[in-house]
Length: 136
View 1 (cartoon, helix red, strand yellow):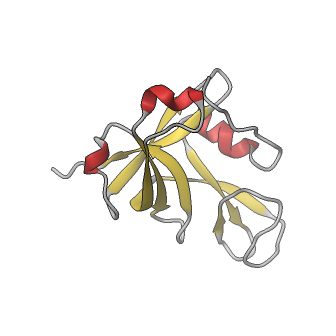
View 2 (cartoon, helix red, strand yellow):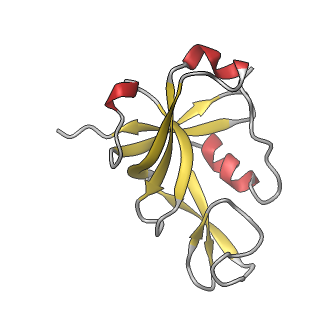
């Protein structure tokens, strides 16, 4: 079985957005800073008020690792696979960890342009994943 995140009141809107195939992040009402990981207070200014804002979900790979030995039996059939830290456009530098899919492991590189997709792992949870943006 694939490991699943355990949503809590702070993170539930993020997971609800993923279920609708929308990437959403908290944005502080006071200083307008996006934040990830979701939480009750803005790490930049300490304000509590925020909105959930949808973003395009494009960005580039900031860093990545190739997993050759799954840490969970739920991912054993996927090895080797890439887990990347994706720096998202339009968010002021938010970096989100996610798998890179639909791309050979050897073709992944730092600064590769990617876009979000979504993968249902159960009836309750949909995960964001990233695929390369092809240049025409």
